[in-house]
Length: 318
Length: 266
Image (tube, rainbow over all chains, first blue to last red; front, side, top):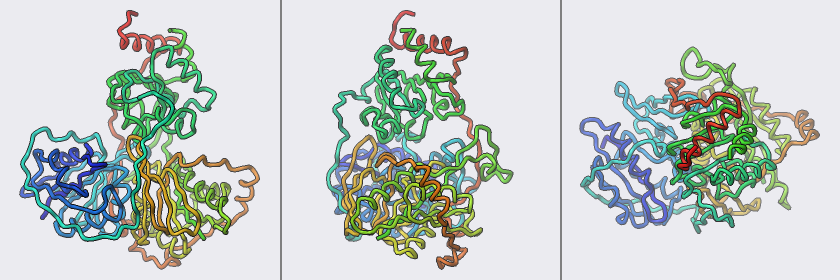
């Protein structure tokens, strides 16, 4: 086959939403006669097919594997066998912690064209071109893959909109080769703490980042958050330093500010992992000394200035 | 027992920067270089294992870069690496993460390393690929985004937690030798003391060529890469509406925004 092979992502028996976004990304690469096939790798793949029966999917491939959850050797072996059998032009996976664990190895072994954290894919004059960020997302970088018959792309989440219309793809089984895995998954551990805050429910969040400089300043912002009626959140460095509990971290590996309507970010530069947890918020106000900070790219309002001065002045208003 | 720590001297952009004439990178006069943040954590993890071990452990920092990256290696030496190794040849210019991984794997073999640590990703280009591709060339077990690790040097397996999206952790046991990519926050990297910085300045940095690692020009650079940069450009960005004035005026406007949200009368 030519065409696009999408590898759906599942965790603990549920399809991850990014899987459907990959189906949409695949449509932008479809040429006449191309098909889009979606493969589901799981110990019980049939249970995951229903949400994938959407417009734009021609074929659903169920791949039964022994490992109940993501495992690098299992995925490399099964996806590698699929690529060998199907010969797709393009393979799409999510740019996620799971794909971090196997995609580069697969590309290295099979000689695939390869790029990660891709937010735009297209064909230009018949050539596949992928766009990603560079230098901390300050520039865009277009890459291509000269001489590569198959290209593996890891697509950034929350960029492509999932298909809305239902579809009726043909469902087929694919027998994965047996594999002796060299690692074995044990338990999942939920992030927990004694802090009873739920960042996903907070409607108004005041977040502090590396710009606060030292732990002694945290109390001042906690007091400010209380005074203005906001929930205090933080970016990764603050949680890693132990200045605030991990449960207050907003971003990819922390919490998503799902219910938030007003988000004030003070001293947060706006790393892509942080933006993943908050860029959807309707009103973002960024306060930062660096006028070039990425956070201003997603903010509705910006204040270029000293966060301590602004914090003190703001406190006087309440 | 030897732990190889792959490090990179990353580049951040100066406030004002220019795209190079060929349109494929930023003019290097505008790059500010430093040791990749993730690598600080993977080095610390290796040094911690060494310090907690009853048997001798050697920590070797390696980078694939021209001489300008020696500064990053000196930092590693000052923070506890026993040796520093740099591999470079003009042919390695334009290597993508997979071509770099091919060189790192050759180093791991030449050094008879027992474990390889790399950062999850680099802060400049964030491919999150080099460590795991290195494992493929070595044929070793591998795991990405390790946020806690329990490993006794020389043991046949290690137990770690990988940090998933949304704050979920997944505990996994893996056979060793292995390649692990290390996440921020796994430990608290130490500061180098003045004394150790001085000592590091006196230590040699070993330099190897590709030929010494039995690599050919076709293994690296654009020939050995799985992607090629066509064009780099400054994106049009959504820009925040700036609130002007002095701090008091800016804060007053911010207070209004907060009151509007809360539905309070100003």
